[in-house]
Length: 489
Image (cartoon, rainbow, N blue to C red):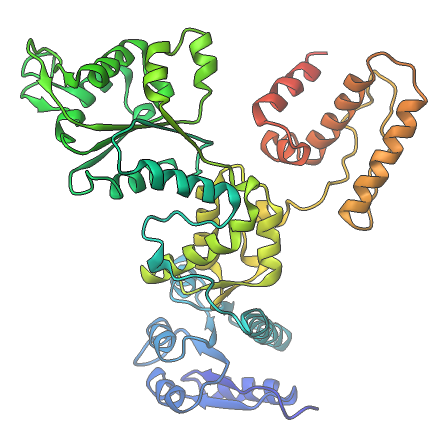
């Protein structure tokens, strides 16, 4: 039996239970330190730092939950397992909220306690191994705007911001949802000559069509039912500054006409008003829609499009700049830590690899949410692979997908391989497909193969269109149309 195992602190006011736990743990080589109260335990922790603590919840004097809170402050790296005979929902939530590694119900058997102790120690070992030699990649104070990235695509964006910020030129920012369009708009304002004047952001998609005109241009008292007083619109409130119209592609044609006038003439008219009001604003707009296509379909004014599209900034999706993910993660950890929202401040190498493999349909916003979530559930300073959301850790590789039902067309795609590296699997699949395609004379071969693959992906994900679209590298809306077409056959 090894004598180099770490010590375990047992805190319980029941002497018999402490004795029982000492016998079990000592029999497996663990040195045991005993405390009969929370107060005594805190004195011990000041002198020693036992890596694992077994803490009773119901004790005379300081309760287990109170002791847990004090221990987290005095010994933040300790793995604390709460022991309770009353497993209420409130106890469980409070235990995890205040940083317990886990909790165990009384009465418990020795294997259960030993298993929890080993899991706690393994978590410490994982944290130590993952965090060894970690150094922050950047100083978050140097990134006040929140725009982070050394990739060529992001450097192009940053250079363009620098070139146009000081002018009053109208800027159109395009990019998928979650790429950071408002961050870029704020950055343009902060580095402009209008930086000391207001920056007003308006999400056009979030305001009902019948209210957006009033929001933008204001209204006079009595202009409509409920207009009990005069209201200034966003353009007036932003006079001298920068107004950012996000999701401009969702704006109705009637409102587009008034926006065009505000740009051309530098004046607006309140709803219900008769006079015009001069305004001096710089306009920055953003959209995730194809405005050129909307112009062709007559759903967006062509003259307004040309007014907005003076300088165009395209923000790349995160999947096109994955080399920026380590910097982004480091920045997010520093910012969350400064706000005291999470304790974790780094990623284990395998967790970072999973982040880089994932394609991030929600872009930087999704990455930020994932990091915040992982930082909250992590047991220590380091986020491990198991702390990441399941949709990220389950995203690597191509799954084996059995057919949902016998297809009406010939089966042309053999079962996907189940072993080996993903790259090898995909190569084998392509070789196999090539040979099978050579052997057929069917004129609709591509449609047949597509149907087979879509059916298998849907079967594997239990008809979850989002997961299936990620597997297939296909737009979710496109996949839904194809799947609906197959179901209709």
